[in-house]
Image (cartoon, rainbow, N blue to C red; front, side, top):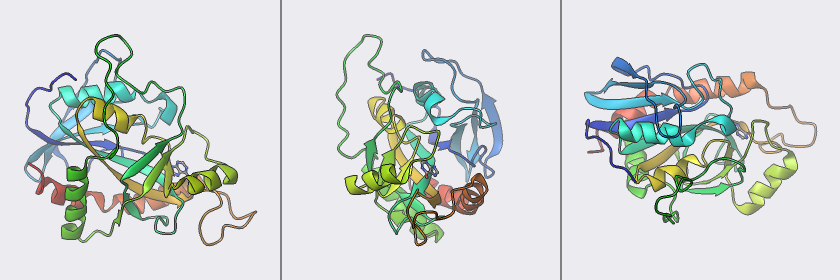
Amino acid sequence: MSAAADTGIALAVIGGTGLYRLAAMGDAQALTMDTPYGAPSAPLRVGTVAGRRVAFLARHGEDHALPPHKVNYRANLWALQHAGATRVLAVNAVGGISERYAPRAIGVPNQIIDYTWGRVSTFCEEGGPVLHVDMGDPYTPALRAALLDAAVAAQVEVVDRGCYGATQGPRLETRAEIARLRRDGCDLVGMTGMPEAGLARELGLEYASLALVANWAAGCGPSSSDGAAEITMAEVLANLEHATANLPALIVALLARIG
Ligand code: HPA
């Protein structure tokens, strides 16, 4: 849709649960933006990482006040684009469904199924041209490939491919819901992958996800019999902290691989 100013931002990072600032960013400036869709979740932080301009935005707000269904996804993406970003790396906390997605794993999913409801999921709401954007590959293949390359270079193990099931939240899922997602082919489950990916496509932004596995999804994992321990926020945050430690190296290596 609308074009961005060319301010030389090489990468925009949207931080999810557990990621509210980019520690590797030097000389960060806060950019408070307004958009036709309302305010973004937080000020954009624009600064330098490994000599490249990077923008960072905390999806849930810097104090994590916004649940997934209250995030203004349109304002966030519009603001990033109008700050000059053309590429978005989305960091998403997820639950692991398939064995490859054990807690602390980092995934680079390649598919999405959207189970969310009641969220504004398109820019085609207020008149203007109706877009039927291609969504066959919801994550930009070139950015995914650069991310996988970067992971090899940074010696960070990542799981290539997987189907992200986007649920409504903010509650976690029932075992039956996760069993259904598994039957549908989902490998991981999170609450923020959609409508973000679809909106990014409508804006023509390159978009890929780093999915940080915080826990086994309900009823999954090695001790998944009925009555297995419930998922705690302490477990979620500890696993996210572990996975997040790899992000600076990954982002630096990614920046060396994108124009
Ligand atoms: N389900 C949905 N979203 C999540 C989960 C989960 O188990 N863990 C972290 N985000």
